[in-house]
Image 1 (cartoon, protein in one colour):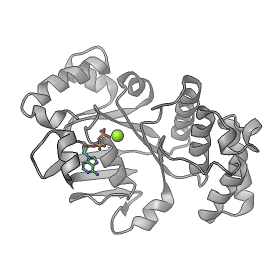
Image 2 (cartoon, helix red, strand yellow):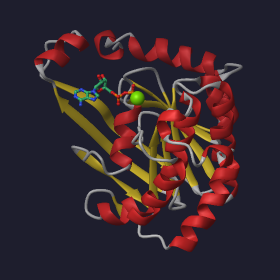
Image 3 (cartoon, protein in one colour):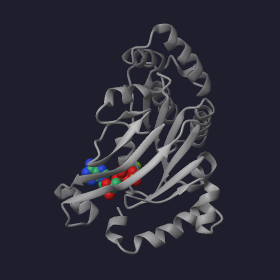
Image 4 (cartoon, helix red, strand yellow):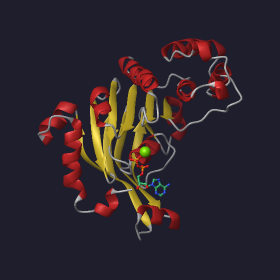
Length: 263
Ligand SMILES: Nc1ncnc2c1ncn2[C@@H]1O[C@H](COP(=O)(O)OP(=O)(O)O)[C@@H](O)[C@H]1O
Ligand SMILES: [Mg+2]
């Protein structure tokens, strides 16, 4: 279970970043008093446009960033005070993690398993399970540099899942993936859900969230604008699909501070 409790994250802006964000302000409130609970056995979605604060939120959950206000608990442990305990129970995935090109998938999997203090029998068991799920068996003895982009992405996901974490945090799970790889990833997330794991994903693709998530929270300009199951959100916004719901909420929530809402 993940409990995000009223977190605010404020970044100091460099001159370069000010220019990029077209602002004169010295700070950017990336996440503003956000609360959300992700339950075991469910896939919880964090939805929002670019710059909404999704990655920042997930980085706070995964102990990479410390919120300025509020706190996050993962499996009952505080992400700041008990960061090590949290790190043991999570897997933080993004499609930007790159593996060393000179090693084989098989070698890297074992290596990452040993870093996580797993014994060799456990590593082999996990290897079989994950290589089967992601159809990596024919590629396991190839060096990363020999793999296609899709295969490289799968390899990095598989290697990071070695420790069978209770909580899986995935920032934009299908971003940049080819359609076949994307399906393998989404199917695996559903498998994790069926095993009772807590899964939280961010996405800006509403149709994906609609298919995948049990519950979603939409964030715009760092603030949560709505939260619920898909039927609850459609009923509340009187719309037929999540994309329409999103645009309705977007129009309602960006009028007052347009500068904040665009990247
Ligand atoms: N390290 C940083 N320094 C300054 N501003 C940042 C930093 N990281 C993100 N931001 C800004 O914070 C806002 C939220 O970013 P982010 O969490 O990456 O959003 P998302 O993942 O939803 O696209 C954006 O306006 C972004 O430009
Ligand atoms: Mg992001």
